[in-house]
Length: 424
Ligand SMILES: [Zn+2]
Image (cartoon, rainbow, N blue to C red; front, side, top):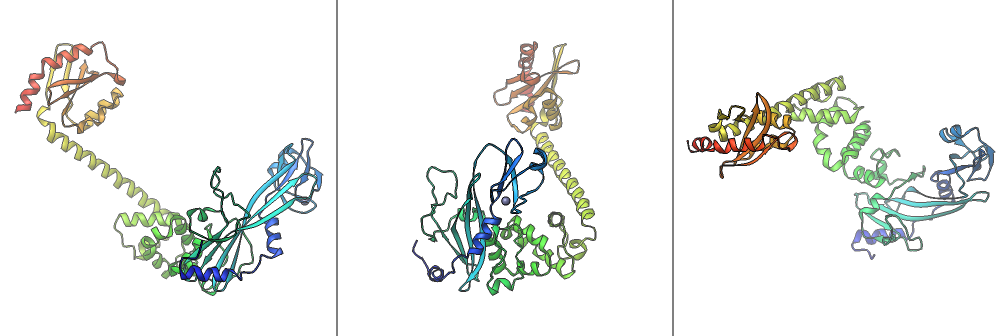
């Protein structure tokens, strides 16, 4: 892609003089990015796929479950008992460097092909570069990827040039892998207090936040790294504003948050209860766990209260809509039928009968009645008030009972009673 603006032009120009990868860097990648296999045959002989050395292992479980290092080349091996004779793996490594005032992240794919008994063959390819300016602007150089006929988003086409590409979300998903320990930093990043710890973040994200938001720098320099990590994990942009005032109070009071997940939840509770989030008394509790749990219980109570109020509101609405039918009942001597006169009763009926009448209280056109014999629930009846007829009558688990038609007849016979109240 041709550069589309001045920034991209400048980066493309700078990229022309970017130093070549060194032998040391690449060798480090082969030694540290690749997971080497210790091939164990069924006689317990282990072969190191890196140096080819073989030795007799101690036993299947010990070899496969404990750390295994090759006695010859000292490489850590992952032991597999297998008949396979060839092994291939692709891994990533990232080199963090600086060039012409830009912070550059160079990501390499390193792979290793091993035939047991032969020297491994290594390949490396620099597949992606992220160039970050001191103001946080960035652009990406990459090789092309195969997109047809593969479900992998990183099927790099190695012979294509590493050049400026249109930004794509995929580049953020590329695993940056192990990071080469010697890093070169632009002075602007050095000043933020960055000390090689990535806090589990993609270096592009971390660097851009450090370069553009001095709140991240403040947190880093005041040792609030647990909070920094938590906020980065939660999504910096979406969350920092919500917590920042309280974080400042912590910093001022030299209160270092150790359990950031707990602390953020706790601040959410304080917020919910309208507490002063600028007040150290609330924001910096001596025993965070105790205070967190106390507010958690308070919140559970508040939620229960809210649920209750919702329920009461439903009752009020139901009463307003159907009160004129309350108390209505009729019987044929065996079966007695009555109007259910509260939401609670309807819910209970639905539970006892294992059908879905529980939610019918809000249906404006429906009147819900229960048919019982000697206090035992038999069927639940739904009457349409506009049509003045039975829409359905259901027994336990929606089945009809032997009394089904008798119940319907009894309701139909008494429809005038419903009609009278409807007109009242
Ligand atoms: Zn070895």
